[in-house]
Length: 271
Image 1 (tube, one colour):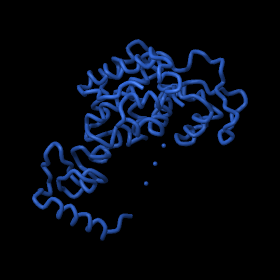
Image 2 (cartoon, rainbow, N blue to C red):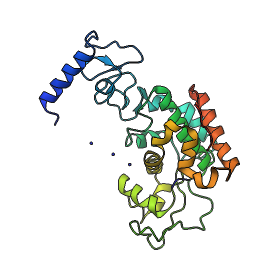
Image 3 (cartoon, one colour):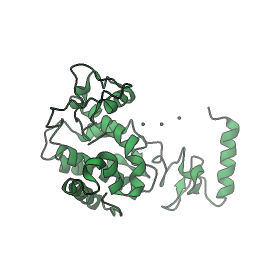
Image 4 (cartoon, rainbow, N blue to C red):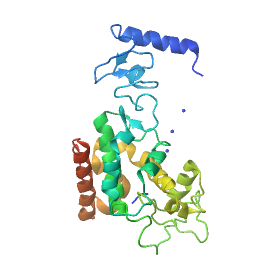
């Protein structure tokens, strides 16, 4: 269960344009690149930072291409998380968790499912929903069933617990503990310590807390395989043979979603 990163001078822009032109002199300024190449902000084809980084127009852009806030690896997140894909997961649930709420939340996290190829983007999306499916029982649960533990760590004085509040799991990744609610609320813009229940009342905030946790703890380990994401989310309880059934359920979800998205799940699936 779930336990965040910036006026170019004219001469610099001109310099980068010259660099792109020199690096790929045969590329036309209107691009028409190969599928493996990026179209830079100045209209040249290539595969390195000047092409796939800031201003990338199309192809496997590092930040999704075209400046879109919900795209990854040249593929728009919304085109991957279709109505059919999302509704196929939440078919057993009520209407708290919605695709619109997810996409609204993704707009605040443009680096989600970006930084690699289109297949990398699909694997990260599959991984996110695999964990969310496991944590919420196919999005049936908004809050943790067992609310006896207030999940207040008094030793974390930077994020002091508020009297009368409990920090048990809520939302798609069941964010827990005061040391997560505090910084998540600060980053998103709500009082996570004073009003943690908002995560169970506003679906967009619920998805934002899940994405906040993901981007701070899970996103960077995706290249290591799905098993590393399990370790990042609930490793102490499930990895190294601690609870193989729970781990296997996450893996099965991930493999299913990868199959639906038409992407190989990769290696190192367990932890």
